[in-house]
Length: 598
Image 1 (tube, one colour):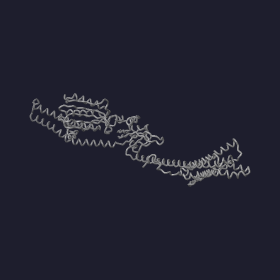
Image 2 (tube, one colour):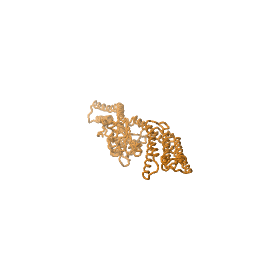
Image 3 (tube, helix red, strand yellow):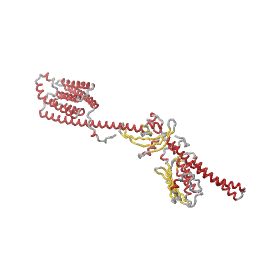
Image 4 (cartoon, helix red, strand yellow):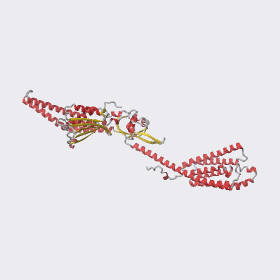
């Protein structure tokens, strides 16, 4: 919907007074007319009571009676629905005539009540068109001129009447004549004043009507935008909750009600932390992240009143919106969230299918890995049987060593397969990654695999590097990566472990100066039963990849032949997770945590 720029009121033409505006203004005119007549009557009676008067007040009473009579007539016509176009002009014309009588009987051309003409002209500017206002101004000037001429034409005739009859036509100053020059000056002043007031009031009324029309247009646009906004909100596929600064819900859509499992009465006016099963400090913690106008995104568990747990993906922003009642901007929180329960369930199913597919591929590799040691064991036992060798003979000892060695190799193969195929319980908690790295390096430094020409270093700034992980499994990841780095440096070299905080999370880097790998080797690096070491089973790095995938930790491998290898692990930072969100296992594996949910 196009919206005019501010200050574009000139594009809206004067629509003229609407029926509603005219009706309201005519009511006001009737009230002011009766009030003015009553004020003149009270003032005249008060002056007569104080100082007395030698003139009759009956003409004035007659004029005021006419004012009341016309006011009642106009009110009845208005009640009967008479709204023809000249209706306002007729009332104003009658007002000018009645004001002329008041001016005639109280002071004549020198009466102070001449100002009543200007008030009527102002009313004409608001009730009529500019041409109608000019007409009323001209009528007032003509009537005033007739009052002035009456002192030269009518008054001499009245002076010829008997005194008792003359008093019936003259009160106060009406009998005094004024100089012709002064009369012309007064008449010219009234002419200028009345026409000036007519044009000024018509211009002011036109401006007010245009402003009112523009305001109505703006209001209609605001109403249309509000309706459009409501339709957009209701048409969203995700839930939307809006709260004030105290956390009370002021707006929501149907999807939010469905995801939360609550009715409209259970949402409107309730606190947001009651909906998300959190504590009352929830908004204060959000403020620390939203001060710079950013967006906070997270995944958390939501429990419906029916006891159903749902995984939701949520984003929170802090905005300002105009308050039409207060006429100012109001800070609000906007919560947008989606139900990810089915998505997480599908992800788990896909991971299970991938794992089953990998296990299927592993079946061939396992058959090969088991066949070789079994063949060695079988052959050695057959030789022992056919040769009738004594256990003290050297050949028998050698054959028995082969059986033992191949049995151990077979056991390692089976253990590795079981570790990959049947992962242990997943129990994430808030853990500092730096001590895990330091413990791994300390164990490796005392390992028999470490040679004097191997150098180990840990680079990290002071502080805690908190993340939501299963400490035992991540310690296994660090150990396998560190051992792989040492094995990749048979001639010695340096392995460096760096840990740092970034905008993406916590980065842990294992870097060595070993043999390196080709691009083809990097591609198959984490596949089961692919090992770069003659002593390895090929399952260690496959287990590493499975654990990191379970933790939703991103891993990148960079390597060149002869240049060493670099592993970059990016962990989610616990500083970006609310305390109750930390109970949500990464990957959405609901129910795998041993802790009680909030």
